Length: 173
Image (tube, one colour):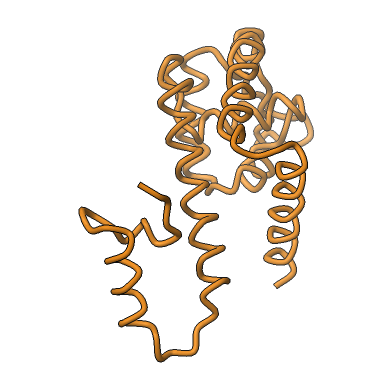
């Protein structure tokens, strides 16, 4: 079955049925269908990537997507103050607290405080956390490559540039 930008509204209906229903409902509203199609596909792609990575890689090491992103950001920046880490991962401080508790109990991170302000928690990867990231990130990258294998290298570069431009535009709104 061919992919549709509107498959998020589909259950057992065909793509044609779904698109006819959308056109019947939204046809007279003067909408920018290409913008709707693009944003719908961004949403679909992001969820498909997350689901694929969770099932193909993260479930084997008992990590959630959010826990993986926390580990990834901490691995790249080596250590981060918890508030900055929550902002970088784009989760609430409360959500980060729960994720850090889980990662700490598994020995994957180290939480410490700075001597000048004991209230500020600094997060870094433990040696076990670094080993885990070195083990799973090549698998993650292999999945990235597989997920984009239908595109040429030029198309991958264009996609990355286009998505970067969308993110920058949203940040500037």
